[in-house]
Amino acid sequence: MLRKGLWPEDAVLSAPSSLKALSAKLQGRHVLGDGLSVVVRAQYFPKSSIDPSFTIKTLMDQQPMLLKWKSHIYVLYGATYDETSSYGLTMTMGKIAIHKLWLLDPRYSDQRRKTELSAETDDLTKIQGILVLTVVRP
Image 1: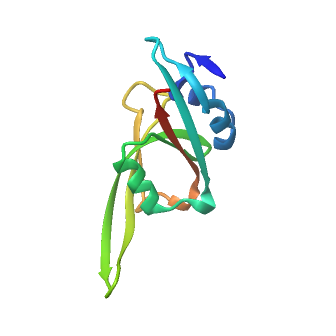
Image 2: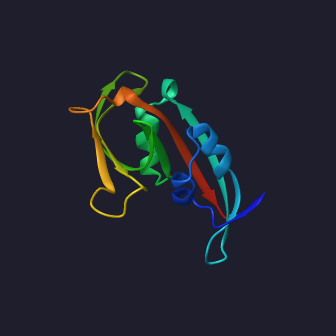
């Protein structure tokens, strides 16, 4: 299916109420305003399967992510975190502690656009899901 002009920010602003439904809306081939064609793959992770290590790796790989929190969808673009490691004879095990998630709110274009979720002041368990987007040229 080829969609013209629909891009994550546009889709989020007219988003269905769930990330799963938004995933279906974003999935597929899109033509951008400059005529460039891209294919979007969307992978939905419900609250129960959100992994801090995967979230940080995805951010480090510069993959776009959408996050649903307090019934709003945000673009997740960064995080403050710590990594601790313990070394065994045959493996290294790492544990990630996320302190803040940096978010963009596509509903605004002023100073309210940037916001953050802090482990000190917000309940990170209230995150309702994450949508990881992979964008490739066909």
